[in-house]
Structures are given as C-alpha cells and as structure tokens.
Length: 245
Picture 1 (tube, one colour):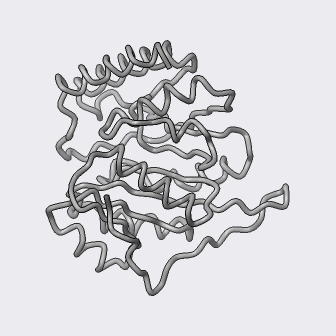
Picture 2: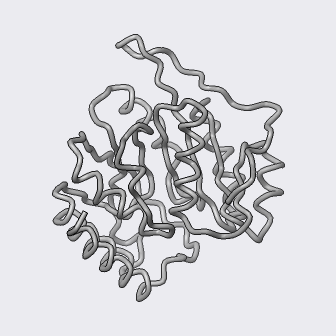
C-alpha cells in the first residue's frame, strides 16, 4: 500500500513528563493529507510551537508539492503510492502508531481547519484518563461554516448518535484522540470519509468512555472533497449495514 517511513534525521521525540499514575503514555499526532501543500507547512510549524510530541504525516498519494513541503519542514511521513482515501490513511496511521509503541493517536486534518492552539487541551485531557476516545466539538459554526456543511453535519450527527447509542454533537469533526489498543478499531473497513463514521458506530458497541472537547471553528475556504450525493448514499448504506454488526 504505502512506502516505508521516511527517515527523519531529527525526529521530534515525546517531551512529556509522566502523569500522576506513574505512566508515560506515548502520543502520536497524525495528519492524513491529500494535495495539501498550500496549508501543510504552516500547520506543522504551528503544531511545533505548541507541542514536542511526534508528528507523522500520511501522504495519501498527493499529486501536488506535498512531498517537497514535507522535506522542507523535515516532517516524518508515510506515503501511499496512490490515493486510497482518508480511511486508508487513518488505518496506516494507526498501524504505524501501534508498531512504534504509541498508546494514543491524535488525528487532525491537514488543511489547517483544526486550530493547533487546541492541541494542548487534547493532550491534558488524555493525561487525565477520563475517557478512551475524544472527539472535537466545533463551537460557533453558524456564520463560519457554509450552510450546507452545517446541515449535513447536523443530520449525520443525529443519525450517528441514534445508531451508535452515544451522543455526538459534531460527528464529522476529524480532530480526535483515541487509544491505539481499542479493539473495535480493527473492525473498521471503510476506505474513504465514511471510515470516521464507521469508527463512531463501532465505538458505540463497546464499553468505552467517550467524551467531547469543545474547539473553535476555523473554516479557511478550502474546497471540500466531500461529494454530497455519493457520500450521503455511502453514509446511509453504512448505517444500514451497522444494524447487523
């Protein structure tokens, strides 16, 4: 699927003190990207201003200058030889995190719509051991997010909550953190955007602690890769199939 991890001559290692339980759970920040050369360099720079945790980019077969940007900023990267979809990128991130001994994975979109300033809140919350899975809850979306995106997000959040049995106020938010050892992660089969929805549905069938973290809404005007008709049908098929899991 993808190439081996690119060597990084100056990898950013975890610079974090042990928590109150005496453990030091390792956290990996992952950025699944496809043709995000315009925003990616600044995003990684901003992340490094707020954390010393390791950052891994999953380049899902980008056709723009993404590889050159990653080389310029010295970011560690796994690259797919073609575009498989966001779900496959997240699956590669999880496999890498497990293989390299990380206990937690934080996922953020590579287009800059997730504010790096919220990252320390995620990290502190992880260290508090209050839950096994965290998802961002974007605040103040009205007037910032396009109306069609607001409607789509609202409807999908309600439906996912009903089918999963867990209340999600912002089910489409890709700013998440979860334990790499969660068994339900291995059952996810979706390759595209529906992977994130499938993950929430499967989490609802497990006895896990799930929590939401309020974050600011940033919409920078980049074109969405969501195709509403196709992805809506795929979402409905996913909900239907979930009834027989």
